[in-house]
Structure formats: C-alpha cells, structure tokens
Amino acid sequence: MTAVLASSVSRFRLSAPPKSGPDAFAQAMLHRIAAALIFICISPIFLLLTVLMAFEKGPIFFGHFRVGRDGRMFRCLKFRTMVPDAERVLQELLARDPAAREEWARDQKLMNDPRITRIGQFLRKTSLDELPQLVNVIVGDMALVGPRPVTAQELHRYGRARFHYLSVTPGITGLWQVSGRNNTTYEERVELDKHYVENCGVWFDLKILLRTAVVLVTGDGAR
Image (cartoon, rainbow, N blue to C red; front, side, top):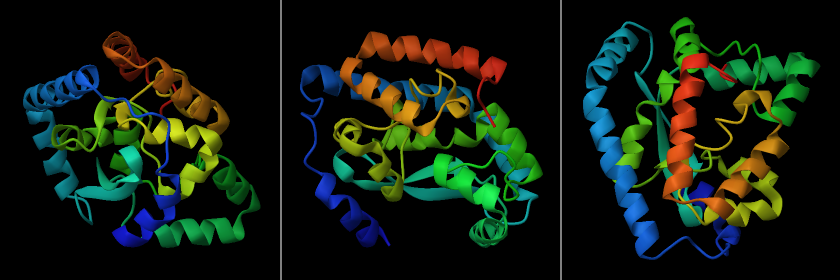
C-alpha cells in the first residue's frame, strides 16, 4: 500500500527549494518540543477520549496515508470519527446521490456526511479528533504549523503549488484553518498553503498558533 501511494507522488519530488538550514532545524525542533509539552499537559483529556472511544464499535485511532515533506508518505493519526465501513457507505451515497457526488468531487468533503459517528461529530466540531497528531509532530512526520496534509490523490489539485507543499512539513494547524477552514473553497485553501510556505517562519507560526486558539473557541469553519 505504501509503495503504491509513494509511486503516485514520486514524479512530484522535484520541488521548490526546501526550507533547510539552521533556522529550519531550530524551527522543527521547537515544534517537536512544544508538541511533547502540549501532549503531557492534555494527557488527561487524551485519556478520557480514549476511554469514551473504547465504548464505540471499531478501533479507537485511525491512520490515513498522507503526503509529507519531499513526497514521503506517512500515517496521519486521528481519533476515529467514522463508522468502520466508511468507504462502503461513501461509495453507496455517491452512487445514488448526484448532489453529494458533485460536492465530494469539488471539496473532498460532505456537509452532511453519513459516515460520521455521533461522538465523531463532537470530536470534529471541537477539532479534538486531531489530538493524536501531536505524536506525528513528536516523531517528525508533521509540524504544529504547516499546510494541511493531503492524500496522494489530492496533491494533483495543487497544480504548480504542489512544489510549495512538498518543500515543507505539513502541520496540525495552518493558515487555511485560521482563515475560514471549511468555509473556503479548495482553490482558496491551495493559495493559503502557498502563501504560508512563501512566508513561513517562527513569528508567522506563532501568530497562526494564537489565531488557532481563537478558532478552537469559536468553532469557526469547523464541521
């Protein structure tokens, strides 16, 4: 599975000049240390959600392959928010509902998604489903701030901006998440990711993290 996905993005490995050097290394280490400290602080919440998820049918965690820096594939971790047979439910819906099929083709998301469980709706609305991604940051697959990790299939939708995406480490939060999130179009999301890559730095990351805290409280764009 990994080999197949990796081969589908291999022709995109030639990317914009990577963000490297002492500043980039220091920024990456800062993200990993901060993620470890955050994980320790929120461990009671993490444990509580794990216990609640244990009462639902199916696994507690879900890991989906996403494209990382330089096209390297990794498992992006989340608390499971969908029914165990989510793919079958999705395909059956798309086969019988033209409007849902058009929405999925346009946004890769559904406003009324039948795959999402009751606790999953709460986790998504509050963004708590993404807490396990702190582990991805600690091990270096992700950063606290960066472009939202995409699937190999989605990378094609980035066009030339895919070179920007591949030159940095994807993040838990980013400019898209604090600029409307699901209220924006996919094209706007791509432009926001491109703008982040062209302007990223410690202070820009800090600004996005502060804005993320506001978004989490207000629930702006979450669904």
